[in-house]
Length: 272
Image (tube, rainbow, N blue to C red; front, side):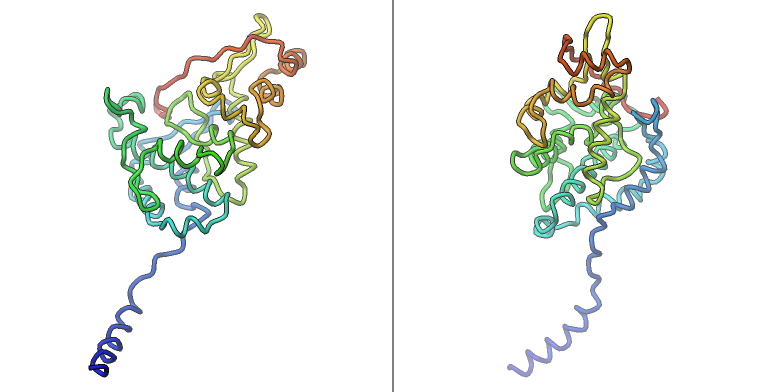
């Protein structure tokens, strides 16, 4: 009986040896990076962008292969990664799956909100296979990226992109762990430099900023990564919010009336 078992085991081992192993995950996110470099169009001096959705649709197999590589990562493997590897993975996953969600109805939509209903917003749809579970975009952003004590970085609000003109720009490169801090800082600087979404009116003394700062105000008041108030945040970025030196000085002193601007939910479509 023992000899028969050994014979069976001996026959099985060669078969196991030829089974393909899962390729190591690419922390350079090369496939996603290639799509972004080809199809993201920078505008407004590089402070905003639009996406060529038809171009991405024409390369749908490449997008699907990248999404599959994200979905194939086991939770146990993810837990063993470094902090910045995890955060880059989640930001890229959010952005890539958002593009896939838009393509599910494109071009028959004008906004990501067209994909929702009275009962469910598009951000609560469970369609993302990630780390062994089927998740929603909200699960990724609020349950994982913004989870207290995990990453604690308000700059993520200038990295995750909801496919809208009012959102921060979709970068023409993937987020990677080796440059993540610089990419997050650059994303925030570019967003605040875009006068269509953040601007100081010296004549009225009004500082108009994106609704993002209203919706996620608490993230900028917890002392995380040095962010302890909106006023201090805007003071630090006065050169991005205004050009004249006098206006910058007023922002640094907090000498303004704060206003949250209307959010533009139109699709960030390069053809729109």
